[in-house]
Each structure stands twice: as structure tokens, then as C-alpha cells.
Length: 195
Length: 354
Image (tube, rainbow over all chains, first blue to last red; front, side, top):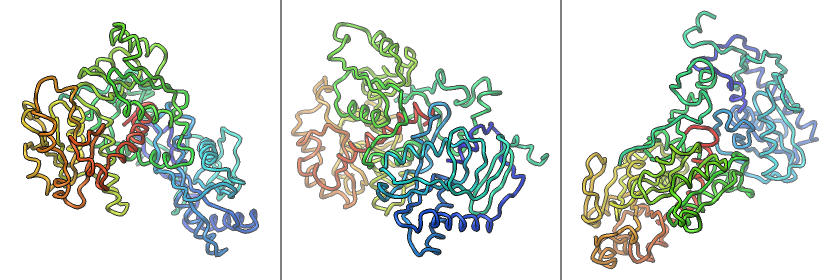
């Protein structure tokens, strides 16, 4: 989902060219370990906590987070995935596709939901996710965790847990995976070498 | 079996359609968003030929997301909030109209219903005046069923809305074919422990019944073969089209000889209202020669699937006890009809591509 926010003004025939590697694999892992400890600290344990990854970029990192939570607390936190395409506010303005079907194998009512996405940018994906969550039950609290907060918010949304605050230009691109975080640009195809 | 639905681009936002003349500004800005989506850009759904194999696969993939929505406690998403879908049915139909209306409502669209029997059509208003009037009220999609083949294509010239063919004469019924493909795909997925088949290669599907007058048969031949299945048409000579030239199928009059090698038996309704001439000695004789009786059901392979687009006439196309066997997917077809029509409406109104 954040992937789509990043690429929404992606012009035809342009490709992502990596410029700066800002986090490597170990740093992503360390950030996730810190976020895991912060989640345990904030909620005084993991009683009632569930983790939901936002398709598509948030899911692999959220899964890794669940693994880390199990290592440090010995608790298997329920895990779900959510695709928010049907809740977006730009349907009809540009092509919107769901990446995967939503999979929430538990009732949200009374749970503390930790929503996980890879990049927080305009905040519109998170707004859509909050609306989708509300239809799946009344969570007692929703907390937002992101690997990268790159700024440029268009809505009053702030994260509770952040891997890295990363000031960016609006036209830059941020790629996030378990392998690391990279800032880059969109370049006309064929011009990659000139950069 | 021509393919009329040439994709038009009149109301597609700039840049959504490929090959637009002004490829400099707006279309450059969004064209790359289609990366990874090989499906064609269509505004209207008139024929399965508009979609091709890639388009059908895309509808299947999106239908999975809506199948999950259908399982929720509140089976509704706000995706098409503020859009209006009009159903214009100039022929009797309950299940297709209800299915489209349910699909639109689950996407939070508003629904307007027009049925020929209760409207100005019985007062002599022309189709053109009727659809232009409905279009003038401000609608985004028009779902149309008409007794004349090609009527939906004609309507695309008169209205600004996206036109969805819900059955035109003996031409096509594309959403029926899409839901049939989705139902087969779902059954295969269950059999393979969740592994979704990429296509229907290696499947042998028989379509049995009134091929000549059946729009369902035409759409399904296109859809099944586009996905790689092998299709056998089974019908008495009087109910077989005069020529099958250009159809990628084989034909036979002998149902019993084909039963043992089939993966899917697709039964068509005997449309008494469309049989203007005497093409069958009697319905009993049809049942005896071409109906899926208990004995024929036993001759099928154990894992063969039985399908019927409905309404099912027990005792003609199918014996009452066979219709209730576990191999029968008839109720799954109805359930999947809503899911697939949600996908079609979302694609045409929400994303602009199928």
C-alpha cells in the first residue's frame, strides 16, 4: 500500500534508481527489536495485542515483528493482514487495485491492534486502514507502527512506533524491505546510467 | 460470435487508456501504474472477447478479495460510495438482476432499477429514449439485458455510463461466464489444498443443451478456451448452430460417449420461450437423450463437476436427485455471481481497467 503512495505520481517509462542506502538488513532488524520492546512496554505485556500488517509492504516486516515479540516475551501474538484498497479516498481518480485479500482470523473487539506499514507518507493509507478496522470490530485501541516516517503528512495522523524518521523531498522515492531502506529517484528509462 | 466490444475511451480520465493521442502530459503521469497489470483497459463489458485470458485472470484475482468481503460480519465496503448503477432489464430476470443489485449495494453504490413490464417501454418508448432518459439522471454504470443481440453495444453510443451486458439475445452473457470460471477455479483450488490454478489447461468441459440459442454457451466457449480448457459442445443437431466455423471446440450429439472423460459438465436450460420452431420432439425425450440422469451422473468421473446457470428445470436438463449431489456447484455459482459482479463493477467504475 505504501508502495502505491510512493509510486502514485510515477511517470510512464520511468524506473526507480537507488541513490542512498539509509538502513541495512541489521539496522532494520534492530529497529524492529526496539519497536517490539516499545510495544511490550507501552501495553505492559502483550495481553490482548494483535499485529496487522498492511498489504503489501507492511506484511513481511510485521511478520518479522511477530517473530521478535515471540522471542522476547514467549507469546504468539495473533497476526492478520489487511488490504485497504476498497477504503481509499482516491478510487476513481487513479487506478486502485487490492494486492491481496484481507485476512483477519480473529475478532478485533476488545483487542489492542498494532497496525504495521513500511512507509508513512501522506497518511491516507492509514486513514483507509482505520476505516476498514472499524468495520471488522471495535478494537479497544489502535496503535500505529511504521519502519520509515518520511513526512509530508496530509492528514492529522502520527505514528506510535517509528523505525527511522527520514526527511525526504516529496518527489523522492523510499524503498523498504527486510533487506534495508533505500532513497532513490524516478529516472526516465534509458537514462539510469547518466545519474 | 463476433466481438463487438471495442474498448472506447470517451469518459476514461486522461492517461488511463493506452495509446491516447496526448501521450505527453496526463497519460505519462499515470501510465506506468499499469505495470504488472497486463489486463486490457475496458470501459464497457459487452463480450468475454473484450477481456481475453489476462482480463479474465484479473477479474478472478479481484474476486478473491471480494469473496473475503462477503464472509465478513458486515459484508460491505465503501469503494463505490456516491456512484449510481442502473439495472435496465427488458427481459424477465430475477437472479441476474438481484445479483447485480446485491453486488452494487455491497460496494455502497446506489441502485436504480428499471424493468420493462412496469415502465414506459410498454407504452411504446424506444430503447434509445429509455436509456438516454436513465442516463440523463446521472448514472455511472448501466447493466442491461435485452432480447436483441447487440443491443448493449448500440447503447454504448447513446449513453455516457459504462455499459455492462447482462445478456443480449443469443449473443453473450459475459458475467455468467466469469462467475462460472470463478466457480471452477474455486473447486480446483479446494481440491489442490489451496493452490490456485493459473489456467484451465488440461480440463475437458462439456456444454450440454441448446447451444444454438444460448448466450451463456457463447460466452463460456470464449472464456473456457481463453483459459486453455478443451470444450465439447453436446446437443441434438436441431439445437446446434448451423456452423461452428471458427469456434475452437469439438461437437457431438452423443452425450453418453463423452461422459467418462469430462472434468466439468455444464448443463444449459432448455429455453422453451426461445424455441419458436419445433426443434425437440418433447421435453421427456430430451431428458432421456441429453438430461443428466442418475445413471449418467454415475458414469461421470468421481471428481467431475456439475454446473448449471439457472433457472434449473428439474426433470428436463437434470434429474432432481442429481441436482442435489455434492458434485453440483449450482448454489456456489449463485453465491459467486455476487462476488464476481462486485469485481466487474469495481473494475469498471473504480479502477478503470479489467
